[in-house]
Length: 56
Length: 286
Image 1 (cartoon, each protein chain N blue to C red):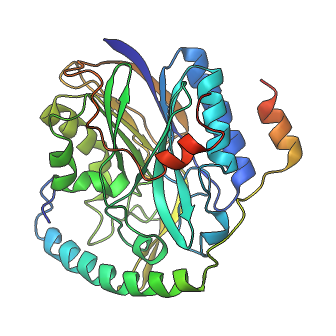
Image 2 (image 1 turned 180 degrees about the horizontal axis):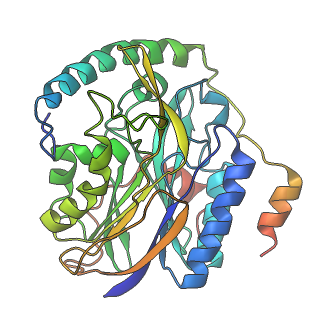
């Protein structure tokens, strides 16, 4: 993983942090996604706003 | 070829879709009135960006209210619109960037390089997306994507214009002004990287960032910064002239960009995973 801009010594911390977050975050995300229903409805917006947005 | 591009810099309220959509629409209207052919909205402009509750109930498919509205506006106002949103596909959530064209085409790029709390909330995308338009090929990226070398290497010599949608914080305490010890030098980079990309790849870059207050959560270090978004949206015209850079306030930044379309519309461009869904839905042009 190479950075487009040099980050100096902080780059090492960021690489390590990103690696750890990838493992921990990925594990947490997988657990959350398994609990989520596969079927769902899109969010809705109030009819008045929809009408206003459709006005033009 | 010259076109007028608009980078829309706006604050978003967390999980308040109606307010954010209305605010974005007003700014898009300003861009349209200025004559913009391309308008770019920030990352997750419709839900707001911030660590918090599950984005699941706020995620949308391409048939959701956000993209339906943006596609309608793109057609009505003959404008290409790029906007960041929470995409939901089954159980998975993606931090995505939609690109809507006046012809009714829709392409969706999924952020590949998730940072900080994002990896806890989103599934990473896998592929770069290049969109063919009548003025050239557009490469899409979201926020922290632009810090990784491989992202731009994928696009090198393949695109005529880059669009980056972002919610990049300053990583400094908004009360004291003190930079975070680790990330404090990353915040200001959002003002520099688009211009570097434009110079390096030789293509214009339109960079849209959020502005306003936020709280940045640093995972593993268990720390929060009372932060603000770094603003500094910019329009960099490749090798032509100096970049135009916004400050920290909400604004519609407009500037002409010069597109040197090298190969025209080619069939090798990468289609996004959502494009077939859009094409098979009522969103596709008839």
